[in-house]
Image (cartoon, rainbow, N blue to C red; front, side, top):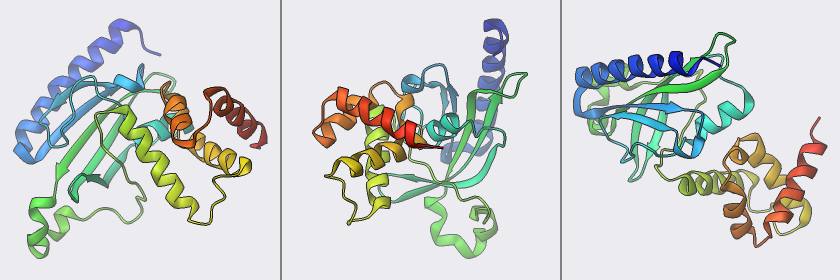
Length: 215
C-alpha cells in the first residue's frame, strides 16, 4: 500500500480532477472518490450530487464485490447504475492502485441519463453502454440500505423455490453474499441476523461452513 503521504497526495489530485470533470459536464454529472480503508464510510470526496449521497457514505455493492474478489485489475466503463424513482445513470469507475496493483480507492463518474431518455434517437450513441460490460450497481449513502439491497437481490436470484427457511438454504444465501463481498462490512452480520431471525453467532457459524465448502 502507498505511504500515508503518497496516498494523501493521490487523493488530493483526484479531488482536483473530480472538480474539473464535474464542472465540465455540469448538473447531470457527479464524481465520487472512495477510500477502501473503511467501506462503511468510504466516500471521502463528492462533486455534484445526483445520487443524494454525502461524504462519509458507504461503498456501493459493486465496489464491495470487486474488492472482495480482488477483481480490480481492470477499470469499468459505461455501465448502468440505478437510482430511486427508476432513474438511470451511465457510470465509469477507475480504481486507485498501489505499486503492487492492489486497489485502495476508486474514482467514480456518474452521469444522469434519465433526462435524455426522450431523445434516444438523437443521443443514442451517447447514452449507449458497452454490450460486453455486464455490470450493474446500486447507489446508497447508507451501508444498511446497501447490504439490504444486496440481500434482496440475492434472494431474488435464488428464486421463489429457494429453501431459504432450511439450514442449507441459509448457508447457500450466506455463501452467495460472501461472494458478493457483503461480509467485508462489519455491520452486515447483525443486519442479516435480523432479516433471517438468527443469532449473530449462528450467522458466523454458517459463514465459516460456507467458506469451508468452497473449493
